[in-house]
Length: 236
Image (cartoon, rainbow, N blue to C red):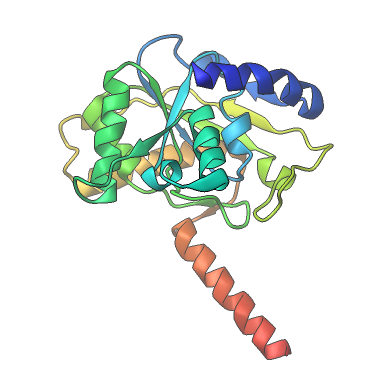
């Protein structure tokens, strides 16, 4: 319920101020479970990605987001609840296993699950290698996978920026559902998981127009931070 209250409040404001656009919205099923697999450019993706979808989009987030104390903890819980995030229970094992278990539960309940296969925001606006958790979910749940491409959100609100820039129209493109039925029953095969993940990332590359980088975004961010520190040290 809180999700729809937040959406009802934010939607008129965001539509009026930023004039976001959507292409391919008909590719999102009107009922039944589905995976929305998207690129991740900006914090703004949490707002503009699901904005014009008439169904609730549920995403997965660390339980830490919901256990903070004080004023900051309260508003953090409020925000992530409002954008449809459910906490991942890490108490039963590794984080990846907890995410898989929670994601499968969300899909079994008939919901739409939003996933960012890169695992974190792009550090420079390019598209990075996807993690294979999305493939495991797709093969075990046997639900449609719809590519979900954010456009212009990096330019509008790059990392480190608190408020979005005005005058940049964010957009979302939804691709045709991807069919992985030929791989059903092969979710334990690492080569199959990589093939499925790469097919999803290729579809996102075509939809978004981003340059693809064959490395993980988290590793690229570490390399960029290390290079920045070295450059600063050299110039001092």
